[in-house]
Image (cartoon, rainbow over all chains, first blue to last red; front, side, top):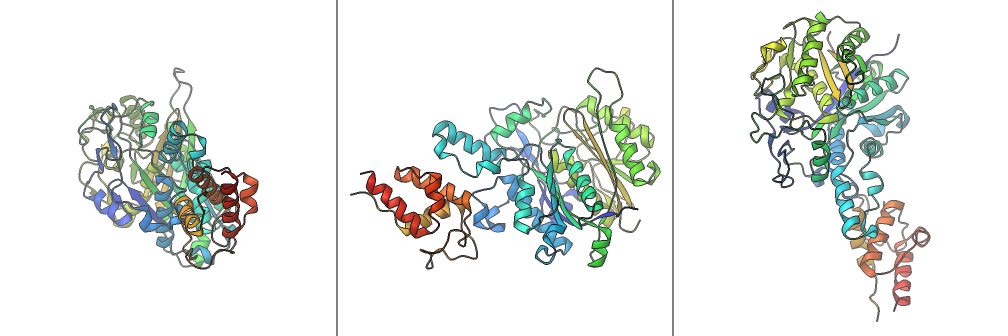
Length: 405
Length: 86
């Protein structure tokens, strides 16, 4: 029998709250972090709303050696990793370096850093480009910097599969823990709200062009017309259950099941892969649909994708048979950061016995979902399913359950 | 007369290029300390070297940079280049 993987620490950076407590309070209050872009002037772009993190001053949290060599997403990830480790009670210096790994996800890399260096290359010449551009833009840089800062030399890497990557990374962490690594820092932070990152995101054709933050991102609503991107996510400390027990750690819960599927070729007429991902994840957890208390939806807010997700949920659980929520209506879609934040939110829901709300949405009854409304729902939560889909066919599903269950 | 490159200039450029290790006092007696013990790895020195080149209008090849392992050695190399470029 393989060891189980438990989560012992959370570090959250979200547009509606910086730090786990701020985020959780904001989320239960239905407080949104969506608004007109402030970090650059969005007037000339068709999409002008985003979920930006306010009040993050990296210099308050990180040594000056790290500032010139890091993109915003890396600074946020380093700080969230510090918070997650503190929360877990792990002191990395006291553990064997090769027993600790770092596996994060990334959807775009360090776009803002890259944009600044490309601008210098174009305007001033190659001798003006920072030597740190060599890695600061790179997908794997958050894993690398967390590893260096905390002296973690165990199995490490990065998963790149758009929004699905946030779950794929945690699943890879579980694989390494099963193979014998005691602790893996995982999850993801994405942040590419800068002009270059913005045009890359616009190319997906899925961004909301609405002007009003309250009606811009409406998954499962008849008015749905794209999503609002956000920045942030969550870093999680995962450990083998034995390792957590030995050091007397408090445990949020267990990564119980996971599966990933890929959609068939567009136009093939074959069923999308999401239902199978949900069923395989349940089977992997040794659970049935009836064991799941709440589903954290991917919530694309594209009519066709919403329909596919609702149909998959209904095929697995039955119509209106499981509470479904999308707290990401308050943060925007965080790409690879979204699902780790949903995992963190699921564990907080278990701890508090409350499911956070889905704001602004007037659910289309045709979807047949029991969508949690604008108020949080008080109920026992022992297990949750988190859904994450990536652009071009990635489907990943993870099932987590509380420490008590 | 060519501009002089001093320890003060080097410290300013190091701080701009790569920040400052918290466990090191750059304002202490560092002239003959190794860059590595001052907390600067090769990439930090590459970035600092590139800034020196731009600011002083000289060229420092990678080999020169990697051989100058202390502030004293790097300051000498830069001043030699400045003198030669008159």
